[in-house]
Image (cartoon, rainbow, N blue to C red; front, side):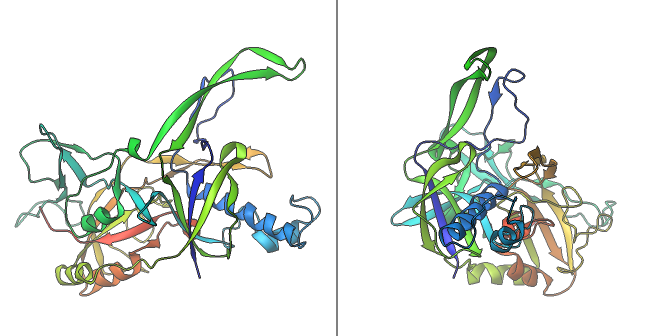
Amino acid sequence: MGLRLFLEPLDVWLFRDGRPFTAGSDAMARSRFPPTPYTLYGMLRSLLLFQAAAQGRVQDLGFGQQPELVATVAGAPDDFGRLRLRGPWLARQENGTVVRYFPAPADLVRLDQVGEPQYALLAPAQPAPLSATPASSLQPLWARHPEPPSPAEGYVAEPEFWRYLAGQAVPTVHAGVLFIRERRPGLGIDRTTRTAAEGLLYMVEYVRPCQGAGLAVDVLDGLEQVPPLVAFGGEARGSRCTAWPLPPEQPPDSLRERVASSGRVKLVLATPALFRQGWLPAWVDQTALRTTEPYPGLRLVSAAVPRAEAIGGFDLVKRIPRPMRPAVPAGGVYFFEEDERGAAVRAFDRWFGACLSDDHAGIGFGLAYAGAWNYA
């Protein structure tokens, strides 16, 4: 049985982004929040090692004397098959349960109006009859409103996210309701004299979740129990860890029926995705914009994809940075229409709550949800 883990820091968290930082050459060490699946995987893999050491199955937690045994217990550092994860998400404990918060999808926009903010959904433009636009071209996205929209920022609470997948424009929650960023000064130390080094004053950006807020991650396989306290993130900060029974990711029947009847389905990313064709999944033909195995029978009509973000990490064994890779950020949306009858609902069934990244999907990259859409 899987687990949903909810993590809260005892004080603050530090999750370094991919930009290099050396005191003296840069004045700010910035944090990425929420962290990538790599960070959650590393923490849980370390937890497996410590549990094995407590049981006497491993004596050397490094890779010096027992590399084969360590790899058997928790996998090698780049072996992502030992644990199956989904997430992470920002989350908050509300009314005795964990409510997830999803990054605002790229097709959700805010209308510039006085007073209460209004929201709308972008949708592909209906192709005109006898259009000169090639069938292999993407359609532009439109919002039926006279005022120019701006991207919605922040996060969408879980109940509203299901309404969004059904085609409704929903409000977002400002990031400041869930977490704040704190900047703390640091001073470099001369290791020979153990005194302050001249010119090495810097700032470190930490993350402090608001009351009741934290991170959630689903452990689908590979972990049976967790301690109440774990070391997590940069500087191994202490964090409370609560395990919940894993709830099913079950889409509403009405949403599935709508996709089946319309023959249209949209794919929404909830975590960053590592696609081998840049912004495009490997199972979409770059020229024809048709899907191939394992999800054939669909045509990509349009897409709302934010600018790529760089994702890397640090190899603790080799003590060198990992190669940086461009990733499609969470919130990317892809609009598909079926060429073969029944292809949309088949894709809907396989996409909802699945990780579709071309690489490292097993640890949470490319977590996707499927919804319905209509032409503008």
